[in-house]
Length: 52
Image (cartoon, rainbow, N blue to C red; front, side):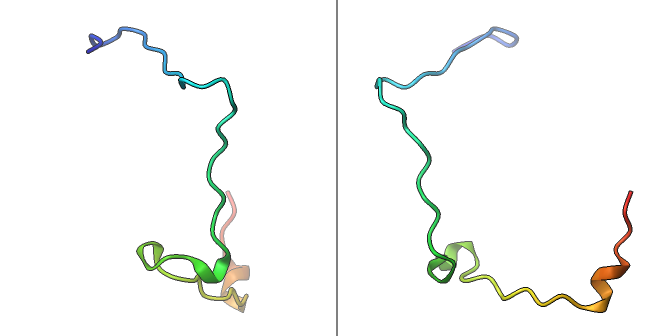
């Protein structure tokens, strides 16, 4: 185990690029992630958002 403050480096054990997995289609979003998202419908309340 590295000691606090000690620098560590992580690497893979392959030479090939390992990209992230593709996201599922919108309708195939698993229930563990809330299921398919609801369709966004803008309303007048959205226009009242405060901008910094």
